[in-house]
Length: 95
Image 1 (tube, rainbow, N blue to C red):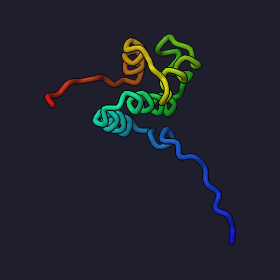
Image 2 (image 1 turned 90 degrees about the vertical axis):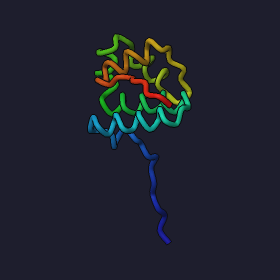
Image 3 (image 1 turned 30 degrees about the vertical axis):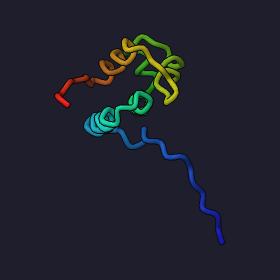
Image 4 (image 1 turned 90 degrees about the horizontal axis):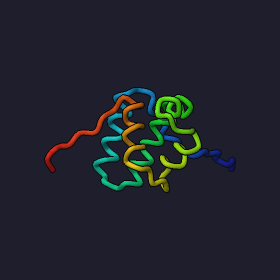
């Protein structure tokens, strides 16, 4: 029997289109878990290119990787900078 070779699934590889990125972040926000939302922002940022995101936000790549990891705890100002750089916006709807 041959061994099956697998590799970790990376959502960033499937987030090329802006509408897919928006839908992915929207689903994360529906979950409501801050860690899930932060990780989703990180996945989208990696899909766009972390170096480009660093330039657009004025933050270092290292600090973006750390802040946007599932264990990260970014300041709200960082989240807003990333959202702006991604061309996305937050909106509020009645629950």
